[in-house]
Image (cartoon, rainbow, N blue to C red; front, side, top):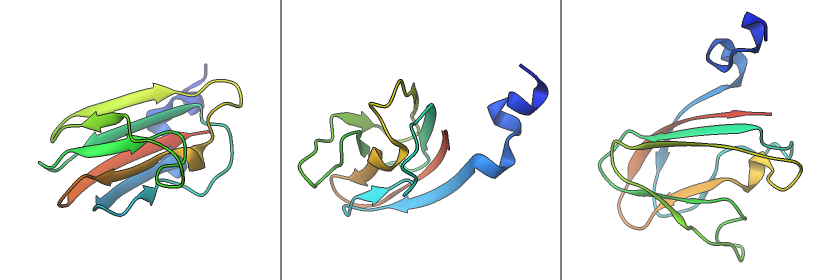
Length: 101
């Protein structure tokens, strides 16, 4: 693709840093299909990630240790950006994140 298609250069889609606690936090209210998501745990407390609505009947199967990062690609219409939620099991942490539609 062209240089304008490179996700690192799309400043308008960079989401930045968030403080995380035991209260679930939706990364975005956007209901678009998720194409790509990157999350890095900048803290030392593990962050848990839900891809199915979190506390409202969902689960938190992904654990991101302190200093670790993960990325995943969406597919079809099975995952919306607003379905990605994060929190800690205890304590607080900070993440940086990026989502692309």
